Length: 75
Image (cartoon, rainbow, N blue to C red; front, top):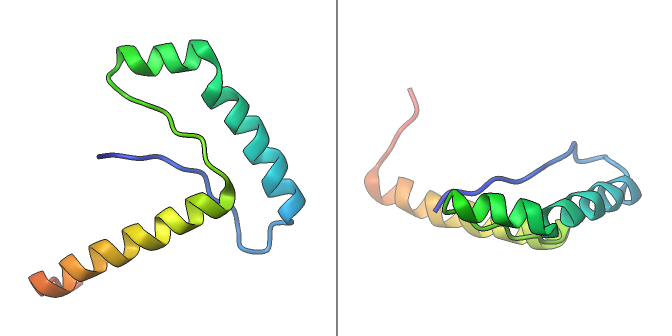
């Protein structure tokens, strides 16, 4: 699975984050956008900032376990 998301600096006002999210969700849910992705074999999922943050925490935890078990070290 591959995914793409948007992020902003930690101190970005919540109101601005919500406005940007609303605009992106509207685009993602647009029929033309959905059809374009479908022809490429992709699927768009529109989520809230809190849902995306939770997804990122889950991904980080999952990959951290894999890194630890594999013994991967940064040079």
